Image (cartoon, rainbow, N blue to C red; front, side):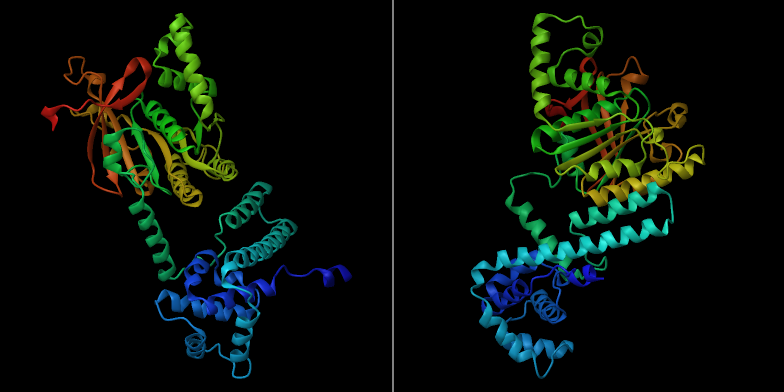
Length: 445
């Protein structure tokens, strides 16, 4: 019993008061504080009421000083005749200086995080005690709670449009100041970047093709480019190929040594040197490979949450995955639509682009024009619905030996939430199983 009485809720009255005092003394620091703290971060109700008042005034660009704040508090019904005026004066008196407001915010934020952590721990404990659901489901729910805290997603899911607009303007400002041509991460293929505006956060991108068209190759191209250019972690889940096979493909990609020679090991001295250099360059990147063939979306999500600097997730390929709940031998159409929905949710939760490869049905084989269409997506129209972009790969020389387009791949952008649809032509280098930009030709201009 004594322990319960001693256990105090984490809070810092002085820091909360100093944050509010600083905002009243010097309104220039308000924008900085609004970017750091949410009203829920304040423990004392009186402090929270004052902060919410200033917060709402800031959203409507109103003048903020002790007089206008008191007036607004009356309007919002949080003004108390006896205490409000004297409390506001007291806040300004006890605040040493507005210059240290960032440090005060950090203290308030830390205490709020500890309170939320204690609450999450209590909820997890209660779930375990009640024992509803499997151990795996309880673990998944617990991980989600902790992950939400780490990402700072503890505020209500209904957010005022004013707060959202502040974030949008921050993003626009960041884009305007950067010298990047596209808002998202680059795929390394310039023409494709222009078409889809790069790989954008929380997007689910589907790359679909018939076997042998180079799905894995383009995924490795993109993985390598993102890992090299951004210093971010790239997670590659390979349900089809082993880690060693993928590494072999990456070496061929990076060193421009014929993939066939790597498989047989018949290499010249010069090729050994190239491989050595390529391996050392690859080791500098942070590409993580998982080749568990029975992995579910929930397990992928859990693994990715533990990566601090995640930039991109790739999955090869959709039809090999077990359904989101791990059950086998159920209705495949239902399972695939469940998986694609879970993947979109994962992309939003992790706030990184997720690229998923997909196999196409044989429907295109019976048509005279064998270019894939959205209706060819195997087993599910839900994939098309959940994906932000759908790209099809098509090589004419695969079907027509006499094709004029030798080693040219068409990347057909069939769905694009960030721009228009259309076809981008890429160069296919079969000996290195890789794609590159085509050389610009005036006749194409």
